[in-house]
Length: 305
Image (cartoon, rainbow, N blue to C red):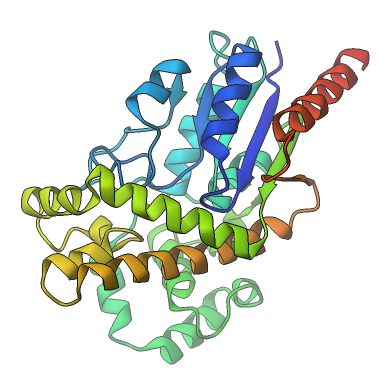
């Protein structure tokens, strides 16, 4: 039986989790997470991970699959997600792929070809010493096609392209591309006006603090060390600063709200670049009915074909 995939995407704090759980119960299906931080164990409050009660309502996959000190590459995620999508035991009903990590979703819906090269931090540190101008000049020599897609100031992607070249001996441009899956996909995006999203972000940040975000950051820092990379991510870095007496609690909260709003704006820009995503306003009184009606139409078209 060919899989059927329904994507629920959008910026942070737009209510993807709640809607997805309601849809999953209606469809009698499972949820595959497409969030790059939900894969990590113990990072719960600051990542807005579904609660234990929510996780028990519907089977969730690709959550808590990595130790905080491990690195899950995009290729790793893609492989795990594709294996689940093609597992007969769980794809009897349309599957829900839910999250705000655009690259995770794109890796599945577009079938991205991803070079399976793990990060080589020693190589990267050596290359970084040369400076971005020299690195980009090297990349121009070994992979001029890649430089058409990588800005001359983008050190992260420049390093990755050179890393792939030095490890495999082949330009990254020759190892990339797309191979879209042949099963039907419906992509639903949740949108919200900036002013309303600001309020949702403020409410969620306050809720996180009440749930014990500060205590979570302190626990993780003591267990894994203050230099754990995940503690420098959104919602953790700000309260790490507070715990290290660099800023006040109110400043940590306001910075988290500001950085979350900026992050949401970048997410929205990413998703808006894909015309196949159909958008629904999260503040509509009948949001669930609207989305459910669209899913029914989608499934009916598949049956007819």
